[in-house]
Image (cartoon, rainbow, N blue to C red; front, side, top):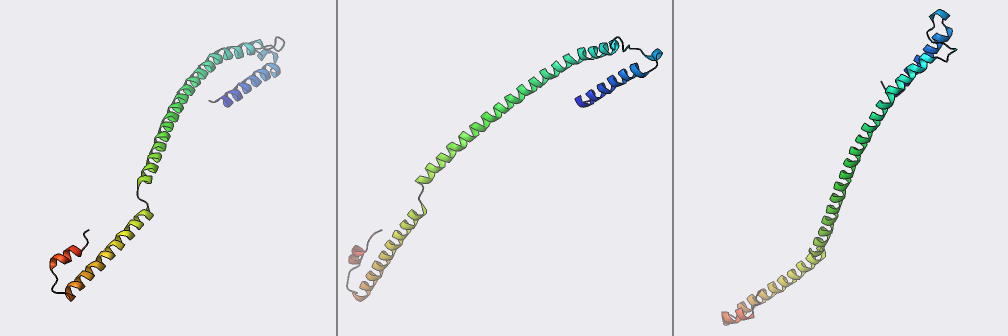
Amino acid sequence: MGTPWFLLGLTLFAVAWISWNTLAPEAWRFDSVALGFIALTLVLSMQASYAAPMILLAQNRQDDRDRVQFEQDRQRAERTLADTEYLAREVVALRIAIKDMASKDFIRAELRTLLEHLDERSHLDERSRLDERSDPDSTSTSTKESRPTA
């Protein structure tokens, strides 16, 4: 029974008590209006004496829950910070590794150079074959000497 329902019930109880002891016939009244509703005051005081320690206990339990929640939040924040630092180091390592990697332009330039070298070599091979065909008296050693080695 939550706090709003308790307050509503206590209010209805007090209104009923006061109404009964004010409007009921004199013989049926059990608390005097003239004395300031002493019995009602005693009942409410007794209720307050029980409620105060229960409220304090509830506050202590809430403080304990808040302390545990705070500790869990702190641990979660530490883990998140550690994960973030780790990821930042990994990103830096990847950036450094990418700088050491061959770029697309570098690879294209190297391939062009190799293609040019292969084209030159194929032209030289064709010339040497043509020379061998046109000059059958030449020795095979002279053609080997004229060929570039790779």
